Amino acid sequence: MLPYYAERLRTVEINYTFYRMPTPKLLAGWSAATPPEFRFTLKAPRRITHDARLRGCDDLVAAFCDAARTLGPKLAVLLFQLPPSLKADVGLLDGFLATFPEGMRAAFEFRHPSWHADAVYERLAAQGLALCVADSERLTTPTVATAPYGYFRLRDAGYTSADVTRWAQTMQDESRWGDVFVYFKHEAEGKGPELASQLVTALGGA
Image (cartoon, rainbow, N blue to C red; front, side, top):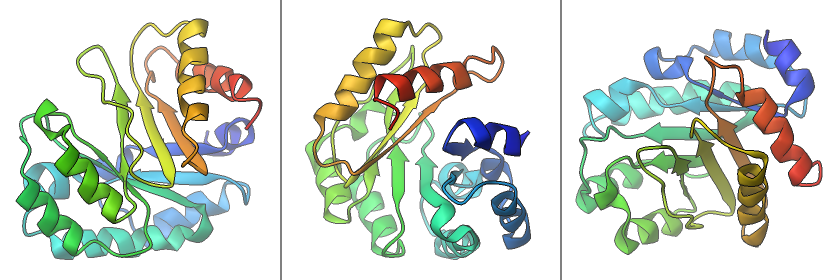
């Protein structure tokens, strides 16, 4: 399945790593099954984001990052998706970012609206880490560039061709982004790859 997918699209967001800490052997196998230009985003383990809630998890983060480095240039971004019940805590974010390894790309998906504030954006920007722009029926994240790369999770159930074109324009309008990583989440209906292909076309085949 992965080789077939990798022939048609250029990146994938792995949800498996949310449930289990990846091993270098597993990631090496994924890497070997894909072409050189393919990129993987790994979703951070729930032990970090949902159990520890970013607190006192330095060893877990280090283990996750060490494993992720197995992918080498095929590593795209590490996604930290926080639970909706976790309200904004700038001190908590400061503590987490203070120990985050330099040079690794990461995106933060804040699912409580209190996080969408300038103080949060400033802290991400100071380290060149991305705000995950998430769009769903429940919540839409403001499109704020905090890194030299963009990260989008487009999860609404009813995207039209016009919607895809609009999102493509939003991405093109941000001059700071050298790379933009976009993931649709519609596994059950099988729409994700189709929407992704439409987006690639709208972006001019980028």
